[in-house]
Image (cartoon, rainbow, N blue to C red; front, side, top):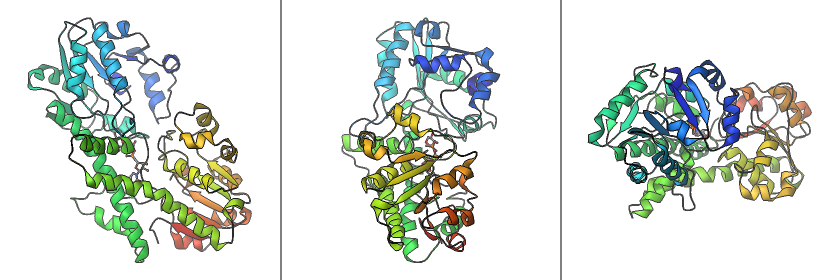
Length: 442
Ligand code: UDX
C-alpha cells in the first residue's frame, strides 16, 4: 500500500484466495491503523491476484514478503520463501530485480537466487531489503524509516539504484540508505530485532531486583533513557515481556543458527529464558494477591484486560497475555473474563492456528473463558470485573489507561489488581482500597 502511495503500480499476490477476495473489495485482512484508508486511496495503482503469470507480467521488481515462522528447533521455516522463489522463476517474463523483505537467516538470499535461476534463463538481481515495521504503526514506520537497508552483491549496483528510486518516492523523511552486501543486510535485521529484545529482557531482569530493593524501575528507565547512548526510544518498559510474530522467532532463529554452526549465543539464550520466566513470575504475583484475600485458585474469578501481544493490533501470536491465561487455567481458576478492544476471542478459537495447542485441546478450560464487550472498553471492563477476585492488566491498550477503580471496587468480590505493564502508580491504586502487584513499579 505504501509503495502504491508513492506512485508505483503494484500487483499484490497471495495464495490465500479469501485474503485476495477481501483486498479486491477494498477491505484489509488484518487490523492495522490506516491500512484500509491507504488501500482505498490507492486502488487505481493496486491489483490483487492469486495468479503468478499475471502478477509477474512486465514486472520490474518483485518483493518476497512471505512469512518465515519458527520451525521445530527454532530455525526459521523457509518453506514459503522457497515456494515463492520457485514460482517466480517459473513465471517471470523477463530480467527481474528480486527483493527479499521477509526476515531470513543469513545466506537465504543466495539460496533464493539459485532456486529462481534454476527455473529461468532470464537474469535476476537478488537484493535483501528487510523491513523494520512495528505492528500498530507499520504505515508510519514504512513512510518514516530510520534507515533503508539494501543488501546486494557488487555486480547488482543498477538494481540497487532502482530500489533507491522506488524508496525515495515513499521515504517522507529522506532517511539514509545503508547499502551493504546481501548477507550483512540479512544479519542487520536479526541483529536489530534481537538487540531490541535484549533491552526488554535486560529491564525485566533488573525490575525483579529493583522490586526487592524498593526501587521504581520506571524511574530507573527514565534516568537511563536521557543518556544519548541509550536513547529516549530505547525498549526499556518493564512488564510482562515481549511477544508477537517477530521478537520470539528472531531471537530463536539466531540462537538456532549459533547452535547449528557451533558458535553459541549465550546472551540471547538468557534473553529468551528471562522473557519466558515472566509469565510464571506474573502468575506468582497473582497467586500472592489471591492468597492475601484467602481466595483459592479453584474458586477464583479473574478479569484480564488485553489479549493482543501489544496495543493497537489484533495479533495474538506468542502473546504473553494468552500464555498467562493458559497458566491460570492450568492452575484451575474457575472463570476468566477477557476484554480486548480489537481481538475477537471466539474467532481466534475457531481459527485455532494462532493459539497454543495445549490451550486449544483443553475444551473444559476453554469453556471458562468469556469475552466481555460493553458499549465501550470501560463498560466492558465493568462487566468483566463483576464479582471478580482480581483484575489483571496484561496489554496496555490506551482504552485501559483510565480505569475507574472506585467503581470497580464496588462490583468486584475482592479488590485485587495485577498491573503487569506497570501502567499505574501502585500507591494511587492502593488509595482506592486495592491490593496491588506489578512488575517493579512503586
Ligand atoms: C518488532 C520490531 O520493533 C520491528 O522493528 C520489527 O520489524 C518487527 O518486530 P513488533 O513486534 O510489531 O515490532 O512490536 P514492538 O513494538 O517492537 O513490541 C514487541 C514486543 O515487545 C511487544 O510484545 C511489546 O509489548 C514488547 N515491549 C516493547 C516491551 O515489553 N517493552 C518495551 O519497552 C517495548
